[in-house]
Every structure is written in structure tokens, then in C-alpha cells.
Length: 161
Length: 269
Image 1 (cartoon, rainbow over the protein chains, first blue to last red):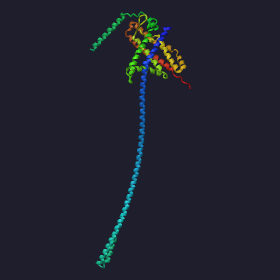
Image 2 (image 1 turned 60 degrees about the horizontal axis):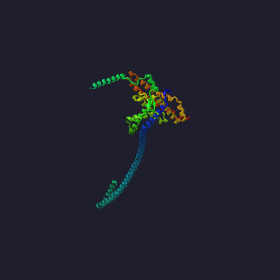
Image 3 (image 1 turned 180 degrees about the vertical axis):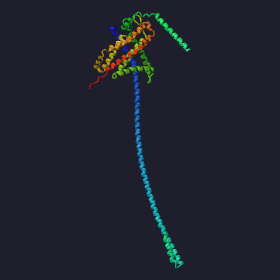
């Protein structure tokens, strides 16, 4: 063979290399690669978990934000209702107060009218008594001028009214 | 005090260097009876310097180197498997980082060049890369073997032996072919056979690169005048460089062609 190529020695080299391949594959390459793959898988799982947690947090945050915005709207609505109710209540109380005031005034007027009538009645009674007393005095005291004194007292009484 | 110690150290070092230089000139090497031409011819053809394989047959020294490399790997891998890998941590230490980088590099090379089918390819190029790199580095240690003629010989890189290089090139081609068959059946065979020159080119690229390293080193050490200082560059740096380069080139080429032939055929619309 050219260059002294020896097929027997080539086969021996091949046999040696096959043994080397088996040794390196099973003792070194496979276990190291397996460890590296497991570590990659471990970190990938950690990364996936972190991403899932982040996504969950984002979801919860979005829910809370939505709830918060809903609550604000509800609060605003409640405020509006309360404001309307308050306004209505104020109106009702005002109206009631006006009614009560009107009633008090009317009652006062009626009472005053009654008082006046009563006073008038009493005054008339007193006047009548005074007139009677005066008449008696005049009649019994002086006979001629009694009629004139009566007229004078009567006129004074009318002017007082 | 420090300066004095440093001066003494430099003087002692210089004396040792001079003594060694004189010694190398006085003492003649018994192995250098051959001319440089004969040495180089033997490095290429392995006609004279054979080593006995357990007394069964005479083989090239490269085959002994190959068995030595496998033995070293077997021991180291066993130690690593028993004592190191069970203690791997999520945050790696230095040795774990080295192992993970080596495995990760070839795994990524396989995945990036052959995205569809790469499990076996990753394991194969890891083994081939480690074999070429460590086999080439072996040259540096100058492990001695005794030839059948009784002279000592420094073990060369396994792939500086033409038989080892042919095995590596052809096996890589067969691996590429297997990827083509596994993914594309007959079409894969066709795709692989188109690159019929691949086993020859891969074999002889390896053989040429590693042999040239060995020849240059042999040449440098043959002449005493070149043996001072120069081997640091030629012997160490060049060996390290071409160990890295050849390991990368063969694994990259294998992964590239494997990916090409194992790519699924696109259906015509």
C-alpha cells in the first residue's frame, strides 16, 4: 500500500477510538450534559414560575384597579343620591316649618280676635255698668242736669273707641 | 537582601544552563545515527521504527500513542465520574466549569450546525476533539517507547500516523453518511456521496498537519544549535496551537457536513 497504509492498524485505531468513544460518552459526556440539561430545566421552571406569579399579580392588580374604579363610581352615585335626599329633606322640613308658622300665625290671629272680642265684650259690660252707675248718680244727685251729663259721658265713650 | 538572593539565583541558573549546554555537546546521543532525511522518511512511512504490541505484532508508534491516550482518558474519566460529577453544584467550581465548557462547546457546535439531528453528533465530535487535542499534546511529554530494534523512541501524536489519520477521516465520513441515511434515507446517501473527496481530504489534512508538526520538531532537535530556546516556540506553542486548530477544524467540518446531509428535504409546493 502507498505510504505504508496498513488496514490491520487502521482497524486497531478504529477499535481504540470506539472504546474511547464509549468511555467518554458514558463516563463524561452523558452525565455532564444530563446535569447541564437538568440545571437548565431547573432554571427554566423557576423562570416559568416567576412569570406565572407575575402574570397572576398583574391580573389581581387589574382586578383591584377595576374594583377601585367601580367603588369610586358607586361612591359618587351614593353621594349624588344622598345630596338629592338631603335637598328633598330640607325642602320638606322648610315646607313643614312654613306650614307650622302659618298655622301658628292663624291660631294667633284667631286667639287675638277672640281676645279682642272678649275685651270688647267686657268693655261694653263695664261701660254699661259705668253708664248705669253714672246715670244713677246723676239721677239721684241732681235732677236737671242728669240728662246732659249722660250725653257727655256717652260721647266720651264713642270717641275712645 | 532580596537583591542579593536574586543575583545568586540568576548566577546559579546561568551556571546550570551553561553546564547543560556543555553536556549536550560532550555527550553524544546514541540514537542519532540516521541522517535527517532517513529520520523524516521514517516519520512519514514508519518503515524501520516499529513498536511491538504486547508481543503480538509490530505496529507504528502512533498506535501505541493512541492506546496511551485512551488509557489516560479512561483513568481520568473514571476519576471524574466517581469523584467529581456527583459533587456538581448549580453554581460551578473551576473543574466543573472546565468540563461543562468542553461539553457545552461541542454540544453547541453540533446543535448550531445540525439543528435537526445532533445528539450522536455532539458525542462524536466531543470524542474526536478530545482525542485529537490530547493526542497532539501527548507529543510534548516525550513519553518513551522501545522500538523492535531496541532503540528508544518518543511517542508521536496518534494522528501523525497515516493509519490513525485515515481512520479518523473515514470514520468522520461514515458518521456524516449515517446522519444522511438516518434523516433522508437514499437521498442522504446521495448527498453524502457527492462529497466523495471528504474522507481523503479530512484524513490527509490531519495527517499533514500533525506530521508537519512532528517533522519540524524532529528537525529542530536534530541540530544542537537549534535546540536552545527555539523548542519553546516550536515544540510547545506550535504543538498547542495545532492541537487546538486541528481539533476544531475536524469537528467543525464533521458537524457542518453532518448538518448539511441530515437537513430534512423541503417538499415542493
